[in-house]
Amino acid sequence: MTYFGTPGGDGPDSPAPRVERVLVVHAHPDDETITTGGTIATLVDAGAGVTIVTCTRGELGEVIPDDLAALRGDEAALAVHREGEIAGALRELGVRDHRFLGEAGARTAGLETRAYRDSGMVWRADGVAGPTDDLHPAAFCAAEFGEIVSDLSAVVESVRPTVIVSYDDDGGYHHPDHVRANRAAVRAARLAGVPYFAIVAGADEATGAEAAALRDDESVVTMDVRPVAPRVVAALRRYRTQLEVVDLPGGAAGIRYPHGRVDRLASSESFRFVPDPDELPPRPASTSELSDMSVGGRIGTYLLAVAAGAVFGAIGTVAHQGTSSVAGAVLPTGLVVSMAMAAALLVGFRQVFRSRTIVAAVAVGLLGVTALLSQPGAGGSALVPANLAGYLWTFGPVLVAMVVLAWPFLDRGADVQRGRDKMDALPEAKGTPQT
Image 1 (tube, rainbow, N blue to C red):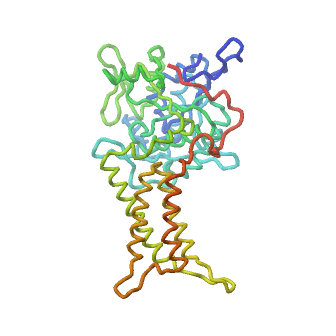
Image 2: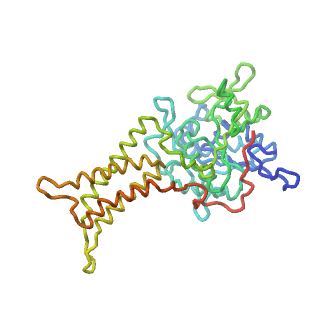
Image 3: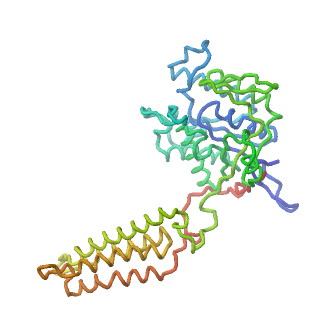
């Protein structure tokens, strides 16, 4: 049975379905049980291969019970203690493959092992988590992003997962380590060509239209985790430093956090398939970036285009007569540079906004300022004299603008070589999401 896709064949003549292999990436010990514990246990029971990667040891986590007060303020001791907590929790869930990022099995070949330190967080005034002001040099968020992705890619190469699961783009509640884990997991998934599923925070509490939207969303996979609830509760009880399991009315279990909030244990866990932008259908050629803007945004963009054209026109008008001497030959370097600038500006706006009208606005600014500055001054002098360079600068940008306006849109679709770094032999990783 597969939950996140179809990594094997579909018909009677297809190869036998391969075992689903799920790589779950989390930031700290206890995150895996709180947000995905039921799914992990369900997958294990179904015979799937499950690998958990934890990015830090949660050295900056709070310590709730007084009998463990000695761990408060002792980051090294708390790190060791939390290693024991997650080991016990994963035993309850049935996981046999757990790796700390940077350690053996989750480190780039040839590099010495390292520990990524908890980056910490602060609660902002709006109730959202944010970064601290004193980030430790060894913190997860201070590490080179490429190093993190490389270490995670080493796990992907070892495990050959059929799916990677981690946070959504805001990390669930904006904790810096969660957000960084999302970025790294998405990048590793894209490099390997493995489907990526993001945890849908709060899905179990959704009601009304929100719940209906989740049910109707074909990209969302929802797990009924009630059958494994006792094991999830047992796993949660292992995290005595971080949380407390409490009994709620009606026989339900809840989780009390250090700041006092109590959440009911989820009866389901949901995950949304996040498609690779490079594999989405290309945007129709007639579609412009301007179509996504408000009226005010469009007006501002047109004004910016005119202003940019005017600036480039002024620079080109002043500089187009410049020359340089090479081996006795006089070269019109000013004209060449001015024409190149004008062409780059027009083509750039065309490609970015995919709109002929925006190019026309650039041309208005460029040609208007050029024409204005071409007029003789009070003393009879002119910035654009009647010589070859002057004529070329007067009419050259006009011709360039006409060509850019008439030329078809340059396709950014499937025919462009994207140069993405893919892993070999992962055809089974192209599963499609199922509900």
